[in-house]
Image (cartoon, rainbow, N blue to C red):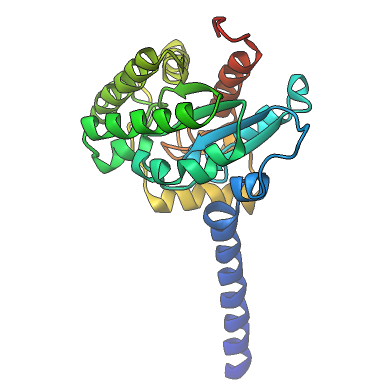
Length: 271
């Protein structure tokens, strides 16, 4: 009897570890759809349609929350476009600068969106260092490609817009606006649109309270229990973010729509 109990417990433990490993792989390890190594490793094929590279961190990668790049790829007006997902979990602006040649320039893109800086805010990277990194990324893309470039402002961290971390984030978004203006490239007001949505909802949103455990729990609800990212967000007292950083379906829809308007706007137009 005792041996049977031990065997049963061992089987249960193996199953739990397998489930935990599955969530970890789907969330943190698996590649996004059409990453740079796959899309651009051998250069762009002659006669291929317009290439759009979305460069950034985990919000762009779209495995810890809703995949706004995938949603953009599926829009009918962009049939024939190739969307390359150059999002890497945990990246800061310094990390993106290190890989910009391999992951962006090598794709010879027609258009590039940059959504980078959330981890700089979280890690306390000095604002002037962030400004130098962002400027260097833009300079590298401009000097080595003919791509249109759009800088996206950073979404709120948590949904309390008055929280201290969002006050700090404001300085980084000011750098993004100034970098776009100085380089005569486009600025996409993702933060502003999310903030307007949260203000219209009324009331005070949940203060920033991200943790790895919460991110893992949110992913487990989605991948194992098949709950939508919006359902996961609601369960955590949020609306646009599932774990105070990564996007719900509703949050991702704002980013997708903002990027779609820009891509559909002729060069020199207003997105």
